[in-house]
Image (cartoon, rainbow, N blue to C red; front, side):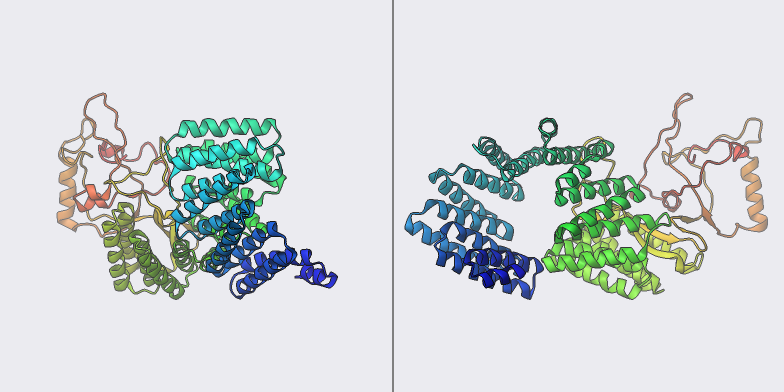
Length: 610
């Protein structure tokens, strides 16, 4: 605005038009009423350029108008203006300017995201116009845009071909610039992503490694950093989290050295997600804070919103070890909701509302948590996402638990369980069962309800290869909403730091082989075979069964021995595979440490517990 005032005072029309374009872009970034003023500023800039006869500047005014229209979330004015300019230059036979305006139109269609096919057709027309005008740089730009559109449309093969052609054109430009080098780097990233999308992990790794070495030899820090980022994505996709972290060690510093805040934020974001997936919440916290700082300095709303969601996730994970900050989690979730609502991203808004509901539970604001959970449920229902809707209902059940409305809590949880089941999400179904078991403990008063702190939601992203440890009881579609995965209950033990603990109630004791039958283990050598069971039965006849009491326990399933020299191996059981009540009660585990070696020796070896 100050530059515009000075330009007007000097009577410099060209500077005035350029300042108006900057004002339009800034107003579009602000959104709301400012975006309307931004469109008007872009229209004024276009009028000034036309008055000065600067045809090559008209497409710049069109780009500024498109930026302002994005703030309004309505591209119609920019599309209408762009089409008028294209028609005007086409009638006059001005191919370079027709190509420039056609390219701007294609980019508007792509950013709008409503009609990918129309964006492709427009980009192809722009490429043809640039070719007719013998503009190699323009051809490369159009091919790069085509590659981006194809990737967004999930057509990696076409995207790969277009990006390879664009990359070759950029490398062969007679006078390369910083802009053309950045465009080449972007095309190489598309090639890596396209190969990954097509399952060509080896080719993607070869390409990224080759480019990393090339850019390092050229001392091109930005290119090297993005190549390392590509390698990390490949390792992460294959489940090699340690290799991914090793690839990311230098990336943030390289991005910082060249002032690329977007790349720096992306690198820190991936580091935070990997640490969260590995269960290292404290390392994830630092990475999440660096990510948020980078995007805040950049002024990137989407980046800020994504970083805020990760910060909230980190505090949920930290809560399980007594280090989470409910206020920070709530602040981050509120920021994420506001930013996604402002950008009009319905899917991310639903996820943010889900986080906001849990942050309120963590802060013990149960009424606000119930409202946010209901909003999240409505948002997921509008998106026809059954898994997200079920997760939002589970959060509502948590709010009812905090309000001591146990009947409503259990009713809502059962509805959530049914939705998880219909969505084929057996992990979510099991989470509800665990939650209901815990609700029973609260209802009986075995531990104070003041300890309830919401849910710990560990991020789980689909991977392929040896590192993928996620299992399912039946085939189902990969989970898309990573923030609603692997829900665990957070409880704070009275008088101590917040911690996770599991309580189980034993109605009786039974020793059976893990295979589901068979006889119990042999008694110690020299002991009366039936003495233990008889004495136990005599005690029951005389004194009755012992009172039910809560037990903090640590158990795991082992295979029954089939032969003398056979060694037991782990057997992972799932709730749906067990048919007896006592089986369901010993599925979960809690960390207690190893017992003394002498413990339990008088009862002999167990085939079931270890």
